[in-house]
Length: 107
Image (cartoon, rainbow, N blue to C red; front, side, top):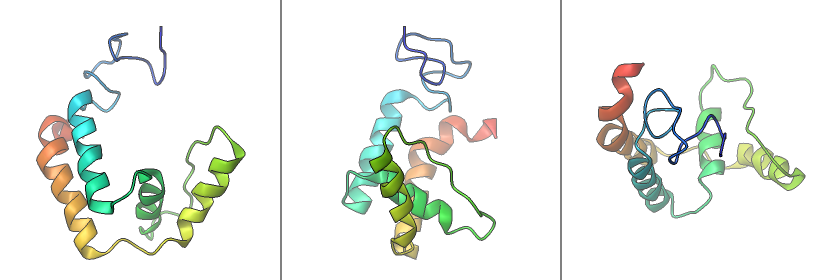
């Protein structure tokens, strides 16, 4: 049985559905595809870390890394250019269209 973040893809146990955030798995994959199309990359982790670092209130990002090379890659994200307003608007549209309707009321 898979206990990754306390389960599912049919090992069940989540209290809100398919993923620990409550987002339907296939819908989450659709959102990931949309984000990959926006950023023209398969490496969304770096984009996500850079996005988090754009907030003045954030002093530290602690991403997971299973290998030393990922620690270096994650740290390099700080040197990426900030996301543009157009990219931020596109990400918001993905959230508002695909994710928000199914989970936002839980926040």
